[in-house]
Length: 475
Image 1 (cartoon, rainbow, N blue to C red):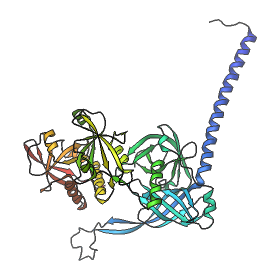
Image 2: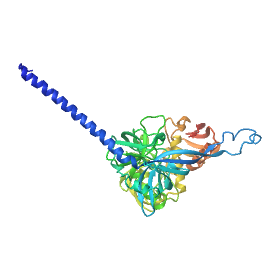
Image 3: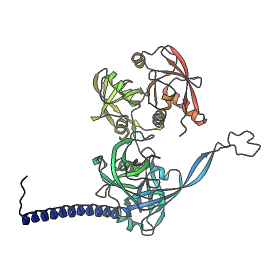
Image 4: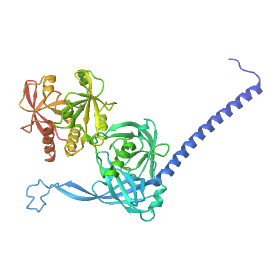
C-alpha cells in the first residue's frame, strides 16, 4: 500500500479521521436524542387520555366443604358456590364525547368491568366519577364505559380524546408503547414491538389479537397500545402467566367495529352460517389435495349453510373472494356481517371449486353453544364429528349403532394422553351411549361440573373395542 512519508500530510489525515469519527458519533447521538424525545412526546400526548378503572365485582367461588360428611350436623350451608365481592383494577382511554347525551366514552376490556356492581373512573386530572357500562362484548373482550359531565370532565376530555389508528397497517417489528396502571401504578409506560399479528386466543373464535413484547401486567388491561404517531392501534388485554414478552392486544379496527355496534344496538350483532369447522392438518390437506382452506365437519340441520347446499367434507377456501387459511379467518369473515347478509362461500368438493351464496342468520344462543364446543375442542385437543355417510365412506367406518368419530387429536393434549386417534369411534361416555358431537361435549361438560378428575370413554378402533380414560381439564 502506498503511504505518504510527509509528516504534515499524515497529521492532516489523522485529524480528518478524528473529525469524521466525531461527526458520526455526534450524528448517532443526535438520532438517539431525537428518538428519546419522540417517545417522551408521544407519552405526554397520550397519557392524559388514559384513565384508571376501579371496580367492585361479584364472583362465584366453590364451597370447599360442600361434599364433607355430616355437613348438616356442623351447620355448613348446603351450597356448592358462594358469591363474593372482589375489588378489581384496570385501565381505559377516552374515545368520544357526546354533548347531546352529556357523556364521555372510554374503551376498555370486557373482563375489566364484567360482573361489576360498582365502577369508578379516575382521570389524569385526579377527577373520579361513577362509570356506567354502555355495552360489552365477551367474545372480543371489548367494553364501552361512559361517565357523565360532572366536575368539568368534558373540558378536560375534549383536549385528550385519543386518536384511533389503523391496525390493519401494522407489521411485525413496528414499535409500540403500552400505557396503563399495572398493579395500580398509574401512568406506567412500557415500550416494545409488534411480535405477531392475528393470534388466536382460547374462547375468542373469530377474533385475531396482536402479540407484543411491550411489558403488560395486571392493571394494564383496557389501556391503549399506541404507535410511533401516538395513534391507538390496540387495547392491551392479556398476558400468558409465567412467560416473558408475551402480551396480547385487541386490534383497534376490531375494537372500533365493536364500539360502533355497542353505540348503535347496545350489543354486538354477529352472523352465523351454521357449520362446525376444523383446521386442515397436513394429512387432511394431502388427502383432499388442497393447500389452503378449512374443513366442514358438520352442517347444522336447517341452518343457512344447510339450506344453501354446503355439505360435510367441503373445503371452504374463500368468503367473498377473501382467501381462508384458518378457522379464525372464516369465523371473522362471517361473523362481522349483519344478520341476513348474502355471502359468497367458495368451496372445493370432490376436487372441483364452486361458489355457493349463503344468507347469514343471527348469532344466537344456539350458535354460542357451538362456539363453546369449539372452546371445549381447544381445551381437550380433540375434534369429534357426527358419523355421516360421507365420513363412513372416507374413513371406511364399520357399521355402528351410535357414536362420534374422532377427526383430530392435538399432540400433548388430554385427548392424546387418553390415547385417542383420528378415525376412532367414541361409542360411550361414562357407559352412556353418545349420538352426536354436541351430545358428547355436553356429557364432558357435565363431568366437569361434577368436579371429577377424568371421564371414561368406550372406543371402537377398527374391529377392536377398548376403554380409555381422558383427564378432565379444570381450568
